[in-house]
Image (tube, rainbow, N blue to C red; front, side):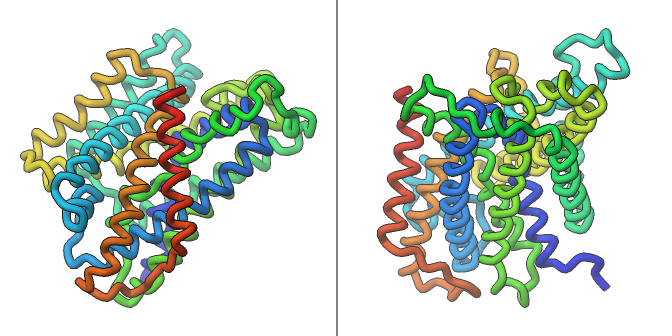
Amino acid sequence: MRLISTQLQALLLLVGTIVGAGMFGIPFVFSRAGFLVGAAELVILAGVMCMIHAAYAEVVLRTPELHRLPGYVSYYLGRKVGWLARTSYIFGLSGTLLAYVVLGGIFLGGILGRFFPALPAFAGPAAFYLFGIAVIARSIRFESLVNAVLTAGLVAAVAAFSFRILPDLSLTDLLGVPGSLGLWRWAVPYGVIIFSLAGAAVIPDVRRVLTARNLRHFGRVALWGTLIPAGLYILFAAAVVGVTGEATTPDAVSGLAGRLGSGAVLAGNIIGFLAAITSFITLGLVFEGMLITDFGFRPHAAWAATAAIPAALYALGFQNFITVIGIVGALAVGIDGILVLVVYRRSRGSGIRPPEFRITIPAWLFWAAIVLLALGAMQVMFR
């Protein structure tokens, strides 16, 4: 008898992949744009990402073979467009792995520094990176049940942490609106929010977890797997911004020290490390697998490339967490989202395999999402 149903395991796999380092950047950009502006934008983008994830789930069910996004793009749109998808996918996963090293290293450094105060600043990122890469090297894949339990624990811990600091919340800090940005404030949270809601990379793996009997619930899993992180983000951002206001730090946690003490900061560091390391390992394995299946790398070469790319980017000085996830979110996640929607529309006329569920996207909503994602990518390039 299963302790957790496969449907719940699939849901928690998606939630656990989405809830990662990006969550800790949300309070910072909310404090810069204004909490109400950030929350409204998060609701809108959560709706867009729900649509993208559900559309991708239908594409996965409609196609006989399992691929990663570049494979589906090549299958339905041709090899030339497939190379665009590969470029965006590599850029997105590379930037995401880098972001986890940067922020996960901050959290791990905060934990280690509590016991070893003399450690240098680079010790946290180095230890985080080496641990994550070592796990990927051994191809240790958490069983879906273990992943589900860890994800459920992570969500509960974030919720408990947020409720713990809510009594210290100040409505003045929470509802204050910075006056210096004008209309530009809407662009401030965009990249960080969309990065934090991205989970398309793991949709094919969610398909693997679901049994044939549960495939009709794939769309529901994609919907709730996106909405649960969105709700968690609003709660977490409200708690942090309401306590630290304009003094909110990019990692969200360290700025709480002066208000709540070192114990709350340690708890936040532990939660942040767990969120970052589980996502780093999952997406590192996705990246390694893509190099093997789509580029013909041998396993050892694929692992070496997976290890080398975030390390090289970090060594080159790309260490500003908010900048990294903002650019990756707006460009890579935006482009991938557009490609998913176009592939979804093309696949509907293929008649290859009837999917177990269908999502109907009105034409106006389809094009509105395309325009929004395109404008989001362009505002980063021309900022």
